[in-house]
Length: 228
Length: 188
Ligand SMILES: [Zn+2]
Image (cartoon, rainbow over all chains, first blue to last red; front, side):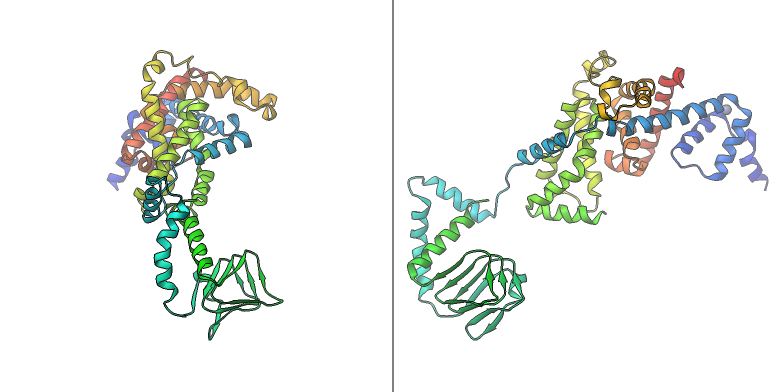
């Protein structure tokens, strides 16, 4: 009890402590007891009271002045858009995957050869290696899309009412499109049946010959290898 | 941690340009206002914003996910602003009142369509005085005061951004406030 009165007692607070308390108050860090102590001091100390008023005004005015530029330096839609596009324009283009980047660099090192010619040389080897392999049904597409697909023997069905958002590639099979496909549908060594309910927003392509297939591989590799 | 932001950072990390553009959208004006208050110069403020995003982009891999993204990006922008302030310090301290002040006098600070007699009065009476006072703050107080007041960040957040203990931030806010009070004394 004695200790408490000592703490709260008016004489306990010096001006130096009072000023400190004023700042804490303005920081929002003074509790009610401390505030009462401060108030009690200021009732008896004109100097601290005046400082309190000045600091409070300074605080409010600073707040006001700091917020004002949001209005004062108001930036037009155009300023904002211009800044945004110059920010985005300055960004370095990041490398794609390392292998692609390396391959492209490798192509640049042999400028005498066209990209396509180079690819054909490379592709012939791998294409023919896989061409004779087997007649296994191969389906490629995005994971979300593949869950909608129904496989019946060697027939791949895009069911009515379903919608694929990406590309679909089927090798060695028949594709029956009854639903919608936003991307391209490519059939390699197979058939495509487009039902009356079906719709393909992208390109649909049927590749039956080895040469077409090579061309397909080449063009898809090129577009995949060159960043953007 | 803001969910949208952390999501955007993750996507940007994977090379998603659109996600990064989203981050630019979210922060560019906030950073601009902060930098503008620090530097009092439109061009320099824009440069700081640009440099900040360039650094963020190049250092995304190094972003510490336990830190708030806003803390990180403000830290970069504040440091870049302080660097600029330090670089021009000789000119700055010799000629603090007049230099860097073009475009900051009452009328030009407020867009014409927002001008009313009252706002003109407020601008000329109060704003200019405070802006001048703030502008004369030494950089280390200036950055603390601006972060504290412009976005109403907590002392802890200001400390995180400037990578300083809260006690230091507190002391600087108190001194900064005292500095401004003395500058404004006759006008209060
Ligand atoms: Zn006192």
